Amino acid sequence: MHPPLPRGFPPRPATMEDIPRAVELFNAYSQHYLGIQESTANDLETEWSIPKFNPKTDIRLVHNPENELVGFIEVWTTSNPPVHPWVWGRVHPAYHGKGIGTYLQSWAEERAKQAIPRCPSGARVAYRTGTNTTIEPAKRLFEAAGLKLIRHGFKMLIEMDVLPPGPTWPEGITIRTVKDREAEIEAIFRVDDEAFKDHFGYVDEPYQEALAHFSHWFLNDEEHKDPTLWFLAMDGDKIAAIAICRRRDWENENYGHVSSLGVLRPYRKRGIGLALLHQAFGEFYRRGKSGVTLGVDAQNLTGALRLYKRAGMHVHRQHDQYEKELRPGKEISVEALKE
Image (cartoon, rainbow, N blue to C red; front, side, top):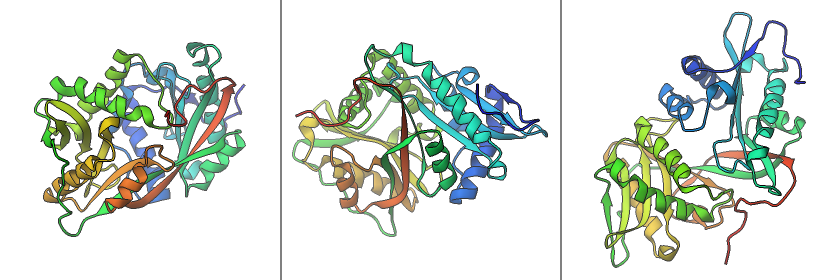
């Protein structure tokens, strides 16, 4: 049994037709707490249509008596195995303190538990969620539900008043952009997947499923459709590193965004990552952008945070990640680097 909702506040599943009202709710929330608009219809259309995600079973909405959307939560169990379901929710600031968040969090936990049978026997299962570190009501809600703070993430930003330094490439490394995103997406995915095996939370997935999710996001999102913002560092005909960029940051159209920066292990510590950042910064500056953002785990295992600071970026926002164990066992996601 879930905690009760106020009388006249019915819950129901979502459909794609709910996207416009969901965008309004998300932006009312982010405007109230952060002074930004965090969502667009394009973002949600891309997310809700990703393979294995079903708005009917994976989302719950709560409406007020006037049929306005005031509560939302989604549970992501699309990874295989789904040992760390991801939960993300919003309650309209005008409706805090009515038990809506408590109800939605309870529903999400039960939904996350349904992923346990799909996980290997003996594997630890824990659902995770998070919030901007300044949003106290969300943190209190998580703590009341028994979640524990486990990690921090940073949104990094460089603000550009003048043209940034140009890239310096190691001997033998050249740079090019993508000519045909669909034709090259699998080769790019291989580099991204291999590079991120050294990152906290990585779970090895069946190749075709992981490729399908990667391809869906980067080929369908409108802001990723410019191939001249997909940078490949080449060693001959082999991709050594990638920087896939988004035309605009979610919260500020005057900023560009680096969505994925990955360097294969044999090519690390040669300055390729820094050169890719300078390549992206310079291109965005030439396009009239005043800044560039990217996200990073604050305790990144590969030293990426040091790289970003060396490139002139600073912490713009902090995100706190919380977790609640659903089944004890062996942790199969990456927590430390293998020697």
